Image (tube, rainbow over all chains, first blue to last red; front, side, top):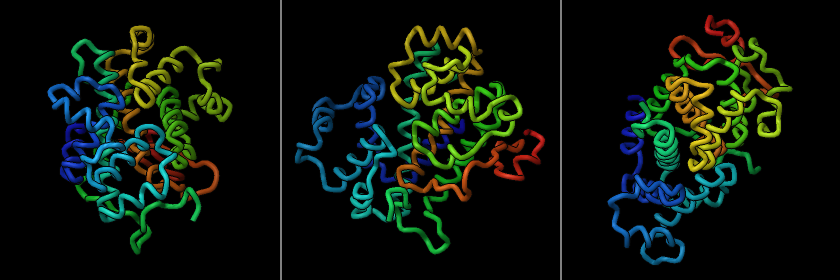
Amino acid sequence: MELERLNAAAWASADPALLELCRLRIAQMLDNKAALAGIDETKLAELACWEASPAFTDAERAFLAFTEQFVISVSSITQEQVDALLEHASPEDVRSFTAALYAVELSQRLDMVAAATFEKGAVP
Amino acid sequence: MTQLDPRLPLAADGTAPMAPAMARALETFAAAAMRARAVDPVTTELVRLRCAWYHDCRLCGSLRLEEARVDGVDEEMTAKISQYEESDLPDQAKAALRLVDAVIIDPARADRRLVAELREHFTDAQIVELLFDIMKWSRQKELVALRLETPAWEGTNVLGFDVNGDALIGEAALATPAS
């Protein structure tokens, strides 16, 4: 219940379009097939190579770069990566987005491990 | 500015505010996770410190759960967490730490072998509690990303939780009945 509330607050507190883009990129990085099911394949292919794609805005690129580093090694995030976010969002929005990213990423990780651990797939 | 200074401009009161509803939701989730008591304090502490070590959280790494200290977790045991696979930590502890790594490093590690190992040492309720503990102790990713996790003390400090699951640090942690 509290996990659902946390995720609801995450989506209400961050730019939902940016968070959705980053949620999908996280799902790709984690190979979370369940989270990618039903998503347009062309969109996913574009997202997988977002650095080379002209389809993304500067803001989207800044948030995607931050998200990737957040997933791979959070302690290696640089001041430059945070500054890039601050070019497009206020400090409070960056803080809220980062908290939302935590909720979205760890929820996916928890779902994947729970699916492997429990027959019903989700955390009981 | 060093690499560990806050990466956001701070408000006049020295904080970096976020949306109030998100802040409340984080606290509510954390407290709910900490109210669960099916897992023993030693395992809980090893899991917490594995998350702190992997995420490089200076705040979590500087805290020591008082209940676990009473039950035998000392600095010698704590030092084994980073290289636990090569350590003499008990099999149950290693199973819990492998679950941590499956969640925070690579979910693909949650294979049949790990599931069997977990079921040998933990009940379903305990596994669920461990999963929520891992999520709670990974909340620090948000703080580490923005380097907002500088402890307000030198060295280590004492950690406890009250009956509501809210964190107590220092003298308050020593005084709580839950410790």
